[in-house]
Each structure stands twice: as C-alpha cells, then as structure tokens.
Image (tube, rainbow, N blue to C red; front, side):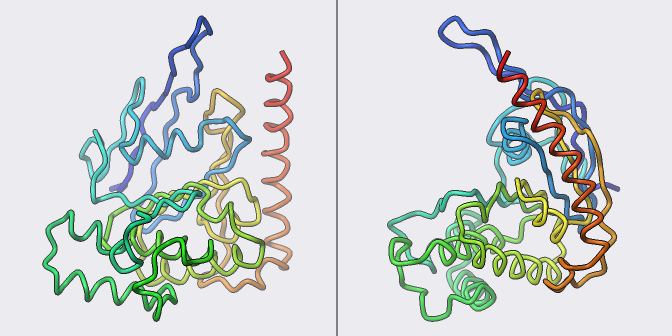
Length: 263
C-alpha cells in the first residue's frame, strides 16, 4: 500500500482586479511509498510549492485529493512535517523550545519532550546552542533547527520546500549529507522540492519533473545510485548521466515557461 497518494490533483487560483484566473496545477497523480524519497523539479512557477502546500494541508485543491494511509488530507496535521526555504522558526523561542513545539502540541509530557529534543539537537549538531534564539544562529544552524523541529514529532511524511536554497554552496552540501544521514536512520517518506538538479539526483530515489505552468508530471526518473550515498558519487559517470537527462527535461520546460510569459 502506498503511504501517500496524490490523485487527479489540480489548483486554480481566482483572478484578481479583473485578471483571469491562474491554473497552477493541472490534474496530477503519483504515489510516494513507505520510505520513499521523491524529489520534484521544474521551472519557476510550475506549481511545485503549491503541490507541497496542498499535501501539507496548508492549501486546498480545486479538484482531486491527497490520501495518507488511505485517510484524506483536509488540513495540517502532526503526520506531516514541513520545512520551508525561509527560516520559519519562532523568533521568541530558543532552539530547544522550537524543537519542542510540535511535541507540546501533541501533548507529549515535558520529560519526554526534553529527551526527544536533546536527541535531535545532538543529531543535527547543535549541542551547546540549546538556549540560543534564532537571531543568534547562522542560516545553516537555523535550518538544522527547523529540520529537527519537523522530525521531532515523528511525522509519517516529511515535506521540504527548497530547504537549502538560501544557504551558501558548502553549507548546502553539508545539509544535504546531514538530511540523508537522518533519512537513512529514520526512513520516512519524503517529498523534496528543489531547483537544483545535482541536489535532486544526490538525494532522491525518484525525481518527478514538472512542466511549465500549469504544472503536471512530465517525467519520472528513477535514481538507482547505491545507498548510503557519499558525496563522491557526484563525480561518477552514473550521476553525470542522470544529471544530463534531467537537465534536458528541465531546460525544455524552462524555455517553454519563458515563452509563455512573453505572450
């Protein structure tokens, strides 16, 4: 049984100030199974983030549905954790308190909250920063906190919307390795939106390429690279071949997106 089912999902935004409505997503269907790691690529404006927000329950589809373990998604819930590109931490809470937030919402007792938070603080390398506020942290440290906060309530599905897009190249690479290390240990179902083709190939089991708006699935590319993955796989011929194929797919849609904008 597929853990996550996206079935004939579409999203149409109403027009404003006399403008016509925008069809962000055409009917789109795919599944993400238990322990699956699916990356989603596509040109800007193709509906990648909209799709993720609908799965998270932060937006509602115009048609179709999302099922998680056969249960319809109708709103946010602790069975889905989300990490955004921006550092969406509560600025008035410490690292420890941010990570405890979802646990508190689930009614987890204080002693257990502290234990779980301490474990994730250790796993993301923030020991010694437990009492720091977000403004006292670097961008990479803030995203490590956000990742720990999303994982602490043990969601079934982890949703990541370009979580490393605002980081410098080296920090981004280290965060990719950290996320894979945590995923190898927990094996949660992951949907990972990114613009970075190298990142998609390095992280995922499968890559979904979306068309220019209105977004739909253009191609599904399996990534058969061995796990666990070491960063040196990025220099392998197999990696290069996958990157070349995906580059062609995404480039064609990016050109189409520019042409559509010019009309």
